[in-house]
Image (cartoon, rainbow, N blue to C red; front, side, top):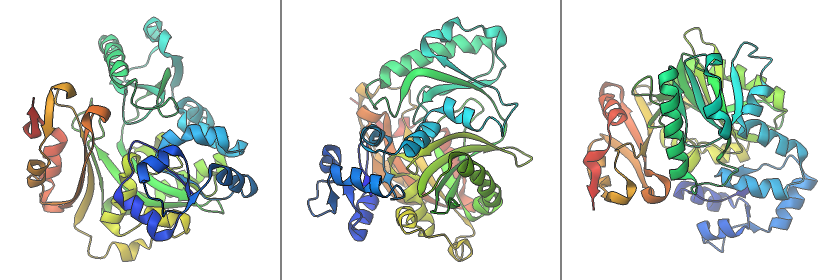
Length: 390
């Protein structure tokens, strides 16, 4: 069954639900978003009883906004414990600490950040909300001079985003400080089957414009990216699955891989693939993999067949976060048509209410290897050329 909530449901996911008659939990939020009486709606009571009588019933959600409903209605201590293991970065680090005994991390209440003894800090490090989303209030701190500037930035970001998401999605009461691990960053969509074995549905390389960049601007996948990393990532996921006793469980994982192929996890997002229906849908655009169907039907990708004809292409998600320095209240519109002209083969451009979510939308893109310059250009763009002021 599927739990639906704001902020966003793609047409691709909606059509997948219709085509497969997947049961959707009949909450007010789901009714408002889907607005389709012909769907296979199941009452909240029926959903509760289904999960209670059959704990292995597969559950997928498009949004962590549904966690509040799950916590209040699903009588499954194990599932609730698994959600908290992954949603709370402090608990997650504690869960895997025996695999990473030398890794530095520290949980600290927001109110204590400014009084922290900086002599005990090991630079560089990352600071982020213990329960967070979408790189909000995430920063790299390289030295003591940057520390107080970052705290000022965090205060500003928290004020600007305080009403965007429920506390189950972003809770800034506690922050985590964790050491910087060199390496390349990747995102993985996967699920654990009924035997607890991980099934990888996509691996994406998250690239940055500089060392200080912590944005979500560009994620790319390709035959090369998947083949170089799939075996190593599979082994890592098996460790996580064993530790948390996962079965019939979808997730979106972010991690770093260093030059010696060592994996260090960044975070795990439970019961979903990438937020705003991004990475889950990209697997379809890139490889013809319907990630939602693969999870519910326990299907596994035949990568050898899938890669045929795709050897020299990259498939990317471009997150159009507002890094322009222009306040949303001063923006009249965003020129998506002009944006489309800057890419050779856009597969889909999704518009988002930038006043509400501080991002203009998402681009799904196919790029030839000999035209990767278009990815570098959008990575470094401040997007001002597409913005019309009031």
